[in-house]
Image (cartoon, rainbow, N blue to C red; front, side, top):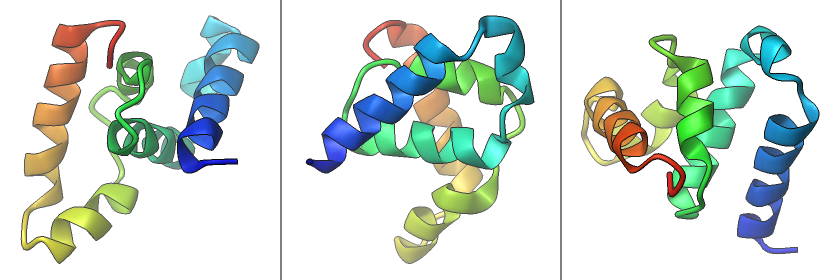
Length: 91
């Protein structure tokens, strides 16, 4: 199974099987990994994950990629979250 397929499955398991009222109690680290995978694979649905994360982004996994590129991870995270919000269902 390809990485994108696993990413879609993680998104779908989270968004369709976890009731909306329970989503904020999910692990922020897990949500950040799902968001990162969705962005990396250019998959839809990341806007819902970013909404659940809110302002509570974790440095992992974002810092691993940004750090290797010599960038500050919050500087990378904010535009991705903003783009996801603007694009709605696509991201």
